[in-house]
Every structure is written in structure tokens, then in C-alpha cells.
Image 1: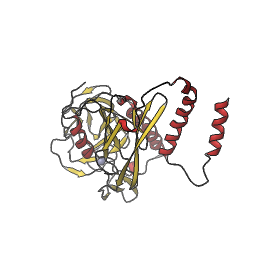
Image 2: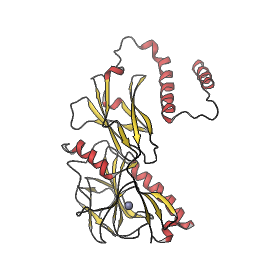
Image 3: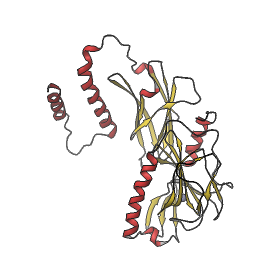
Length: 334
Ligand SMILES: [Zn+2]
């Protein structure tokens, strides 16, 4: 009773002024602190003497002080033996899981933060948070987000029904959005990546980089969420890293599509295939053929559209795999 009354009072007191919205980070902190505060009220009589792993217990280092929208930032976190990696979370636009670092000493962990493409350039804050019993600590890391080196292009000759979908197709697109979101939610904490990644097309020629702002048939604006590699119809397409197939089906925009989960929140996708050679739940080795290039879905010519996402955030495949290579080049498979 007492707690609920206090809770109401504090909610009234913190009612925000009209026209101002607290940041999502502030809301996230607030929720955790309210929950921790309530537990602390209950628990306070039982705490006798614990050595609290406060701010000195953690050292966190971003892989760069600046990061472009659509790129991946790695946060390396060193903790003393009072804090296990399992108690850590990194928070940016959403909580991001922390894993033991595959290369560094025990006590070092890492988090991969995909910066969403739509993030506007600004001085941003990431938080490394850790919980001990009922207490939550947060270490804030300033990171400057800069505009990525993205170009603009026009694409003509795309089948108009893929640019202005019919009512039936809009329904199909909505259904597929759910199917895709569900597939991305399946992630395992163990990693299946090892060694450097494998280019999915043997003759590596980039025809359109990630992040290009596009106008289709002079009317539809969108952003290119993947990397296009030149591939004639029938060219073998290979898995960039080992993993488990989570999607292997035809989609309205992506055409025949294969999505592979690599563990630790990393997925790669292969679109517009003329043929799919793998099935859902199948384990594939890095370099294994997953299908043949084609021109299915929203395209004007055969090519491979290659995507990579980190915890569901679509990022530049080339930049992401460069960072993953450095992390997992000597990591044992599980
Ligand atoms: Zn593409």
C-alpha cells in the first residue's frame, strides 16, 4: 500500500511538461530505476555487507569515437571478477546483449551495436548497464554519430507492380513483414562464425553499395538496405559465414530469399535468387552454395542483394563483416 501510494506520487511529480518527450534512453533508465527502487525498499533490511561493484568495476571502450549511421560499433567491456558478462547490457535505441570476448582475456566482453540508418547525425550516448542484486549501475559513453558516405541513384525499368503494389500485394507484403520479423527473432547466444567471411559471389563486383538513396521508376523513394553484387542468372551464391537457415522462400520484394542466422544476433540474407538450394533449419557451412543468382522480386536485372543485420538492425554488410572478422577470426566453433 505504502509503496503503491509512493509510486503514484512520484509519477505525478515527474509528469512531463507538454510538448517535451523524454528520450527513450531516459525512459529505459527510469523503468529500471523504478523497478530497482521498489525492490530496494523491500530488501534494504537484509543487506548487511556487500562489496558493490560500482563504476570502478567497469571499463568500456567503443571501437571508435565516431560511427556512421548504418555501421556497427563494437563496445569492449572489461570487468573485475565481481561482475559477470551475464549481468551486463548495452543500451542504445534498444538493449543489446553482451557476450564474452572471443580474443581478449577472461573478464572482457563485447557488444555489437548496429546504428540504424535513419539515425540523424548527433552526439549520442550509449550506456553500459549492470545489475547487482537489486542495484543497477550505468556507465554512459558519448559517441558521435556521423552521416555515412551514401550516394543517390535512380533505378528505371522495374516492373511497375513491384513499385506500386496492388491491394492484394499490400496484404502479402504485410504478412511477409511478420514472417521476416519472426525469423529475425530467432537467435542463439553461441556463435557459428569462424575465420574471415566468404564473399557470397566468386567474382566480387559491387554494383550498388549499402545505404544508397534510390528512386524507382521515377516515383518511389527508398534506401538500399543491402549490398548488390554483380551476378548473372544462375551464378552460384555462397553463405558468407556458417549458420542455420531461418528463411528459404519467395518474398514480394526480395524474391527467392535465404536468411541465415550466425549466432550472437548476426544474420545475413541473400535475395533475388533464381533457385534456393537450402531449407529452413538446415545448418550451412561458410562457403556452401545456398542457391543461384536471379532476378526475382523487385529488380530490373539479375544480381545478388546481400544483407547483414546485427540484433535486427540492418547495417552495411562490408563494414559489419570487417568488424566480425576481427572478432571471430580465431574463435572456436560451438
Ligand atoms: Zn540490393
